[in-house]
Image (cartoon, rainbow, N blue to C red; front, side):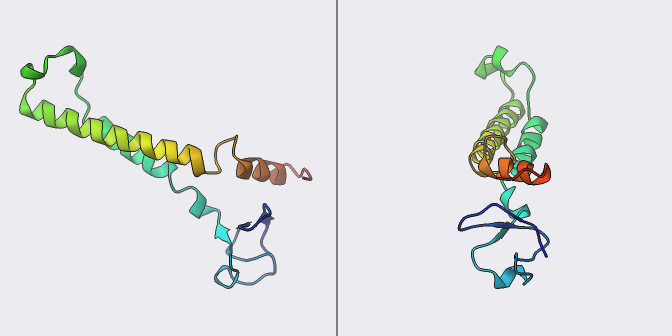
Amino acid sequence: MADLIGTGSHPIVFAGLCSTGTRLAECPGTRTQTADIMYLGPAFLFAAFASLFYVPGFLDQPLGMLTPRQLVSQLLFSVFALIALAALARSIEFDPVWPWRPGFRRLMNWLLGRTQ
């Protein structure tokens, strides 16, 4: 039987089983734990992409002195950095891995054996 964390309309289910022992596809209103951490990974991925295009000393150079390669590289850096920040903001809002989210507190209480 799977361990059920949380209560409410959307319980989180581990091991692909509902609390009744049936398969996850047969349990309406459930979601797996891995589906909840979907915004933090892209934030790190786009931050890594952004780091590939960083131009050192970009803010110290006048725009007219930049070569086309540096300008394109810095534009790509800016785009990927903004996407990474947006994904991080979305992760902070929805992912249960942050300490102020109720899902994190429920998981920690369950792991530490505390009653709710």
